[in-house]
Image (cartoon, rainbow over all chains, first blue to last red):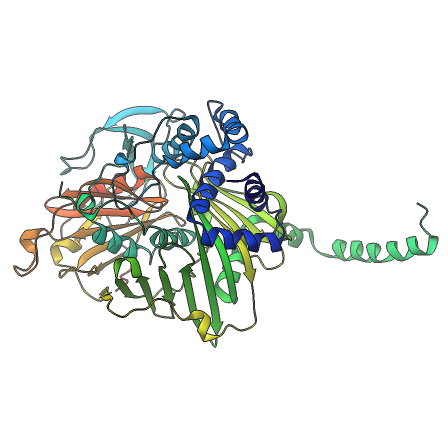
Length: 222
Length: 351
């Protein structure tokens, strides 16, 4: 991505790109798939590196990424290119990332989305989970509180102390799913998303299209 | 530079007038205008009631951008909306008052589903009640400019790890969201939408709402919502929920390609929503139905997740634009209840 395009991308995300130049950038993005990929990678990483509120990097990845972007843009682009984007109808576990600072940064961002950190949440007990869930993984209880589960019998519902639980280890999505069935679930769910989330659900359905993974791999039975 | 006395006087006069006007506004009204919740309601209203035609970039985590066009028309009480990819897939969604059609040319498929809800494609936020405030922190951030317009920036931050948050850049004049970000509990951006162009015309021609997809030879799949699940399936509910989530809808739905209706449960904290589908086991399906391979595990759905497991022989799948542990938590807690146990005042049959 040329320096000029990078500057345009940065200006656009900062809301400072003139409308005439925005139109030109848009046309270039529409025509150029490679540029779209570069733009996206830059956008995600740049968001963190511009000091977006609340972005918390425990290691100084931003500075290293900036060095890559500033000093070796081509190399950085190559490395970014090695990142497999999340595909919602295939296990992300297969999307291994190549070595490289930028890749590590992207991976770190993904990890934050996938695997929350509960360092600040007191871990108090181990929950046995609900009856009849033999396949339920070991769960670590967190944040005991009162919850009402409407419509449930007293034993499970009305203001009964429960332990909120979360998987103790959730490194990567690991399911085996069939594309068509997932599409049907998501489509049916899109009627009741979190309103703002509806945008996400439907735009994701639009975006997720050029999955390079052969169907035989994606729809393999467990 | 010296300013002529007259000029200074002519400049001060309107300022004084504006100042008097501001003083005349009750402090409570001024405070309400700055309340981010009020602005979110303004955004809701704008998204649902205004005509708009815009192009935006959808930037996903992991490095992917897609350019899309959104056209939203409200005419004579009828809402028509079109969301189309301008590159890549060529996928389109077209919604009229009661039906959503999803054109997937790359899959040679068209999905059609009746819709009783009229939320716009770009989404909106519900009115914020005390329940939502308990789990989200809503703040105004310093304003800025986007597309040459002054914008108001609002952050909706989750207070725990069970939900995502948002940052919104709202046009000061129209309250339209010119930019939105989906963030995790730590504020990291997962996805964002940034408008490159947004027009709000008085009228929009039909041609701008017609799909550009050639449908010849494509397979039509119609979702059938007006079914009822078997008594067995209808008694499944989540026994435990993350804080703030509650059952808001319980019904049945025949998913595309299926012959037997599934139970469709919707759990919401007022902002985030998780759907749970409970499907019949192979033993309960008609003999003519092809066998269905059970799915188990977690996978990503754009910014959200899908988690499937098998409970008492039934396929249970939770879908939501929430963190992974939330769908997994809810799916794992699903269990059957006896007849009469699983009916509550908060349920509302939607089909």
